[in-house]
Structures are given as structure tokens and as C-alpha cells.
Image (cartoon, rainbow, N blue to C red; front, side, top):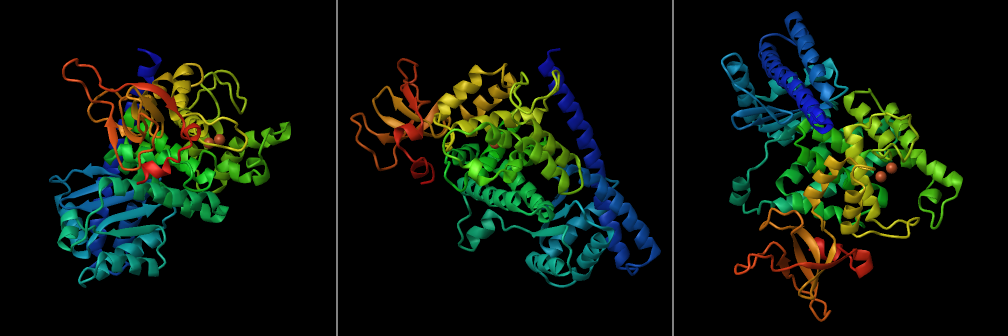
Length: 492
Ligand SMILES: [Fe+2]
Ligand SMILES: [Fe+2]
């Protein structure tokens, strides 16, 4: 078996074991929540039977929290724990139906439980669900009640209106593209919050960031092209935040190609978002210095890997998620051949997530203008660089997955076509399985006259007579070289 196959098998085995344990704990959680809810209709919360049930419930909650946080989704006739469906069978039928009926009565769809939750909070929460059941209360009101009670580690999300409900109300439901944008900008706002948070608030912001990462991963599944297009617009906000979100999304695109389980995707996305957190310790005068950095300034920049580990180790309980983020913060400038920094002994294994983030980070950095870098690469040239260095600096399988997700002409590349027209790549073509066939929005005609209206050319179109592609690429440029702001074409 090749090394890659061994790694793939090890990941698959690990995921299988984790998944089985998570599903088992998920079933226990539903039964225990339902049992306590029923007990609270008979006994008061101080009763011994209730206290015993609460202890068992907390054990299950702690088991599930090893994955970072818990999301219980009660949707139609199904219950999901962290997006994995819990089966309803003869052994759990009664508790399963009880919890679904409860969610329906209270109009709630999700219960989110975060690390740090106490047994007291958990019990006040369950008591609150028991108290309000008889009243006609909306999910939103209940969420407010829970916040008022000072329950900070448990959140409920009201049942969402379906697209049909919204249409009945005369509201146009958001398109996948709009949802993708919402997820991206939400991730951007969260990155700003988490990277700017003082240490004592960081744990709270991190929980939010985890949800934003999950939403970005979902959006990527739903409409990959729209989400990836947003990473090509480099002037959304300050560099650090935009870069963090771009690296997060590009890493998730690789994870998606590898078929990583949702829990692992979430871990990867958060580690990627936090990869440069150590840079907050670097003085802005060095970070934004125009021109060549001296030896000490480079030393300060390189030190961000270690500072990242130090920061992440201070913000809370070192669970698996935090440990994974620390590894990525430490290793993300290490190449496959162990060149790069920080210096590590030979034979040091580089974590899968670090190898993924190394690729996403390099690509985003190469394609973004920075004061100390004199060249901005076109996305096409950056992709070619990654492909050229695959096997030396970068993991070849992961580069393949990345090239498959973005194509050889990634979104934001300016192409000159065989027809003489020029355009910007906006997405992959649906007409061809070849990832290098893109859809181009025209920016200039064959004579070089600018084109204002929206006109697109699909490079996947095949000439019926010859069986050949109609269009071919003559030249690829960066937006910088072409004097184009991608925002004008990718956001409209
Ligand atoms: Fe970095
Ligand atoms: Fe970076």
C-alpha cells in the first residue's frame, strides 16, 4: 500500500470510530433529555432521582463535547447530532418522538451546547423547556428567556421558515448564491471578532467562529463556485481578516475534495481561520512596513507561529479542537521537505491539516498585494507554482485536490481568448468535467473596447462539427496586471 493509501485508510478508520462513538452518545443524549423532561413533570429539580439523571446526562454531554460543541437538530421527523442522523428504532422510539413533539410545540429546531456548560446550566435549561411547553411561545421568545436566565453555554435556534412558508408570506427566499455571500460575510465578521478579542473573551468568540465555519462549509457544499469567487476579492476588509477567511474557505474546499467528515471539516476550518492568530502580537509597523524587512523584523514575523501556539494555549480547555489549531499555527509555514520555518528536527511528521493550510495560505498570500512583496501572482500562476512544487514543498495529493476544486484558471484570473476577447473567470463550467474549463465574464471585446453589460463565455462549449472546444486561452493575467478590480465583476 502506498503512503497516501495508508494515510487515507488511517483517516477513514479514525473517522469511523469517532462517528460510531458520537452516534452512540447522541442516542444517549436524546434519551436522557427526554427522561429528565418527564421527571421534571413529577419531581422538583432538587429530587434525588432527578439529580442522578442529571449526572448521567452531563457525562454524555462531556463525551460529545470532545468534538468542540454539540448541535442537536430536531427537524421534521428526524433528529441529528452534529449533522449525523440518529436512527429511531424500537429501543429509543418513545424518547425520540417525545423530543420531536417537544421541539414542534416550542417551535425550536436546534439546540447548541458549548464547552464549559455546567450541570446547573444544563438543568436550568431543561427545566425551562419543561415550564414553557404548555404556553404558546415562539422559538424566538424562548431563546430570549434562556438568555435572560444567564444560560450562556446553551443556545436554541427557532424553527426556520421553509422556502414555501416565506413565499406564502410574500418574501423571496434567498438563493444559494445569496446564502453563500451571507455565510462568507458572517465568517468575515466573526474572524474580525475572534482575532481582535482579548484573551478572556476569546473562548466565547471561538464558539461563534466554529458556527460560522460550519455555515461556510455548508455553503461550500451548496454552491462552491459562489463561495470560492468571494475569496478572489481581496479588499473586503483588513488583510488579516480577509486572509483568515480565505484560507479557511480554500482549506475547506480541499477537505471537501478529500471527503472529510463534517466534524473534521469544522476542525480544519477553524484551525485554518486561526492559523495566523500569532500575528496579532507583531507590531503593525513591522506588519505593514513598505519595503525590505531587516533581520530582526523577519525574526518577529517568523515568530508568529510560536506566538499563535502560545495564544491558543491560553484561551481555554485544551480539547482536541484547540490542540489541532495549535499544531496548524505552529506548522503552517513548514514545507513538505521541512524547509520553511520554524526549524524542526528531520523526520518530523507534518499534520494533514497543516499541509492543507500550507497550500491554501500560500495561494492566498501569492495572489494578494502586500507592502513587502513586489509581485502579485495571477491565480493561474499561483496554481502553477503549487503544481510545480508539488512533491517538494507541497503534498502532491492535496495540490491535486486543490487544483480540482479551483481549476487551472481559478476565479479572478483574467484570460485573453483565441477570439481576441478578454474576460475574468467567474466560475467553473458545468458543461465539462475538465476543471480547467471556466466561465468567463467578458471585460473587453476583440478590439480592446471595454464591455459594460454582463456577457459570459463558457469555455466548456464544444463545437459539434469538430468535437473540439470552441474557445481556448491565449494568455492569463492577474487582476492587478490588468488594472481590474475583481469586486466590480464578481459581486455584481
Ligand atoms: Fe502565517
Ligand atoms: Fe497566513
